[in-house]
Image (cartoon, rainbow, N blue to C red; front, side):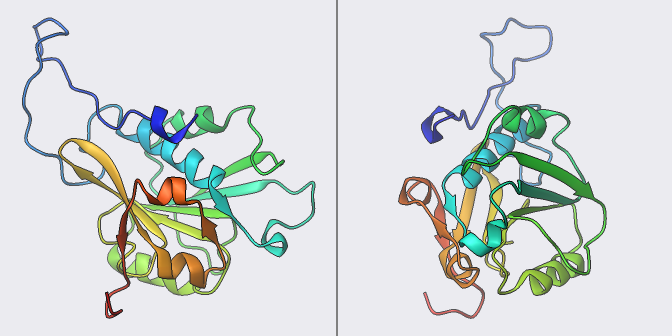
Length: 193
């Protein structure tokens, strides 16, 4: 997958009409309201997040250790995330995907995706990941402003993402300029613009 090959919106045909007849729908605002392809698109973006992020060598462990993706909260991906990473190696490593419902005391993984958490749970997760080489991604607009590295949001029926470059740097990570040029760059609340 290249970054530009990820379709970010798919029009939905009106029920009872042909596939060429598209209905205007109100702009979705909450995660999960972006239609049937929303999480397929987000899975493709997460693949590219891993592909275009560089971690410090110590964060990757031994050469045979996999890249770990941890989903915390609701797993809305169905099989899309597994399919996005199936049979692929990134940074010369296999990828392992795990899911937990609650914020762990000691979060582990190269990429953590927070989905369907309360604001209090998100704040706890952000605090527990602070200063660790973890690409922390949220599923709501403003998660990166609150201290995460990145987040998805829906705009004009498209999946978009924000990146907080200060938090990425504080985590000791580097995200390729290829990916950053597609992002809306944000700062942490209280940080000078």
